[in-house]
Length: 254
Image 1 (cartoon, rainbow, N blue to C red):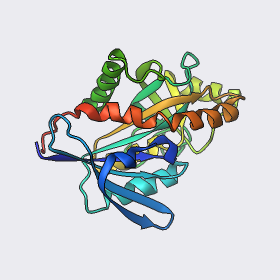
Image 2 (cartoon, rainbow, N blue to C red; image 1 turned 60 degrees about the horizontal axis):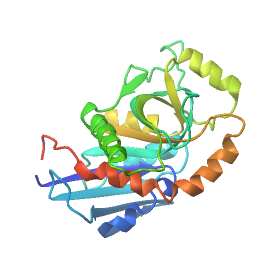
Image 3 (cartoon, rainbow, N blue to C red; image 1 turned 180 degrees about the vertical axis):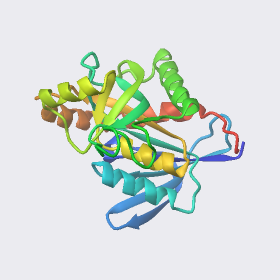
């Protein structure tokens, strides 16, 4: 196989960690305060001669995330896959810090175009939930599960697939959590960017996957838990990505 170009996006640099240090021939483009890096993974992987990574940290929120992924997709490098990674608050109280949730689907919990559309429905796509790409989602789940079984990712917890909700709020109010969970059953995690990236990807026809690591319980202790977790997570975020990149599946256009 020739090559694959992966867009790797997060909200904060801590969520990508030392990824740039594991790329060679790195170039940088700046668009105002947004920096987009492009380089080649500095080792071989199965199925590809070369793996190219285009990465950025967008800043918090849906607008920032949509801006960043749109800039990446409009660049000269054709993107084969989008991975958004980072931390999230637990909506499912059985989840603990360091557990990993890979999105089966995402929903924007603050989208409400009623009465023209039902609550949560995205008008351009005429649906509320966006489903991630099965091939890549299962690859990441299986790669991480295998890595844990082989003794890697010791700091991380359980790995599961599930529904993730995106909105422009850092959620720590139990009343808000209860309301959203009553309206959106089987919700696993809250975050602020993934749903926007998924919407852009769907409209542009590019496969996407959202990978989130639980940082807090989305409760009154969230701010303290989040701040401390982020300091620890920056040391482990590349370990997670490194395990994902070990065996990237073959796609048809390569």
